Length: 282
Image (cartoon, rainbow, N blue to C red; front, side, top):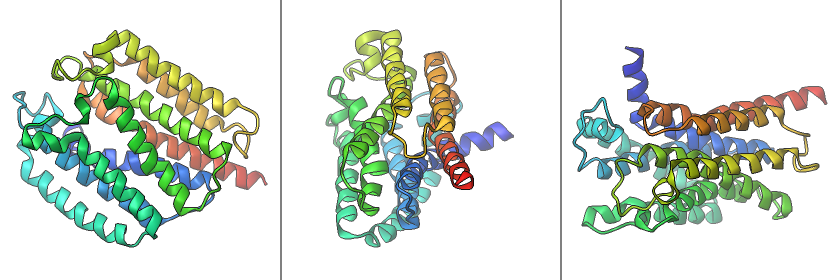
């Protein structure tokens, strides 16, 4: 019963919505600012986008619903459409409430996201078919949505620290995206040259671990974090490295869709704990 409920929550895209929202929360905490409107926009727009994207990707799936997220999406098509439409309407409301610059930056990011899957509706190749580009494309868009736009909203000064925060976020997102390419290595189209197809599963895993290592080193760099070394965040990054290291094609889909995708949520909790402890100790 619990597994069925968990799978429904994850496959209905609420979990990935929380994941993207959590990274925005991390950014606002880092900037000592808050914006409920944008947090809710991230949540609703992510649910809507993944709903539409997975409906497109599920068309050619033949496995049973228990075996594959796309097949589950296909068997619950009406529910996914209903949730996506409601979240789209909510997203439009929250989007119009943004200031001009963040609003159009978000619109641009949304348009670029659409290029990932929309061409499939017209039997054309989207950007995900460009060799080696899919991974960076996804991570870059998530970085803009969860860090660049919160920085615009919070009117953060552009300096070396902000540039390094962007590098940290980009590398973290690359690291947690690679396991999904590992999962899909046997089912992706042969002409969709993902990193595991290009350099092998072990090589792709090593790239992800290198990204995690660099992110951890950034946390240890003197002066990078104004509140000192955020050991709770370092712990999450170490956990990320362990989970990435374990990633394998044979693992069940929920390992990736729930556990790996839940890492940003854990990171947000760890960041909140660290900043909370820092305020208490002042």
